[in-house]
Image (cartoon, rainbow, N blue to C red; front, side, top):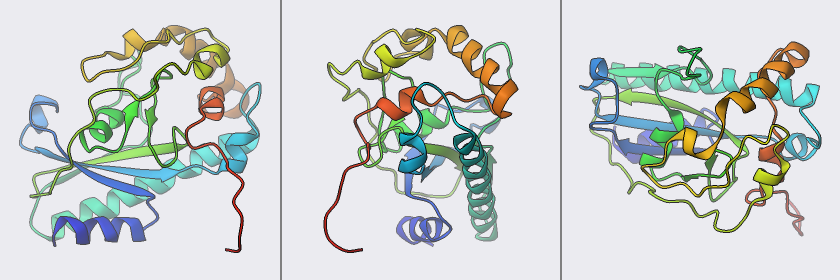
Length: 228
């Protein structure tokens, strides 16, 4: 199965965007033999995101949870397909914290996505895609299959926009434009953001906020004419 056929298969399982990345030198040592990565994106509902004004809603919390479940399902199907073709594959959970102190997962989904050319990291420290802005969720699959990677993205296109910085209820965003060498801590005060999401988890059962997603002009709802 070639890269394009695999991409179409994953889109058929419910993904919105799929990209392939060369991850050599960018994964933990125990997985260094998995030099290719797949970034799988599912878009969020514009109506649900547009309703986020001063904080998350119950609908957003449910949506967030079910989109993560869909992403994990797609990642497992993708991994199983790749393994059936004789290659190795590792699905990385869509939303899992393995280091509570640093608030990190097994690998950065955003890193895989930028290496796959799907978008850049915004001032809100989230992946910004040209199609949907930050109104997305991500999952990744690592593999040794011979995929055809796209050129990586290495710098921000946010320019002088500071809407997310001004809207952040925690005052956590520093307003800096990202480049490939920028660390998360250069973009935001992680502990301040975590205080808000931790508080929200007590109410919504998910560590969410969503305000910086809602205000981003890229991917915002636009009125379209004509029939569907």
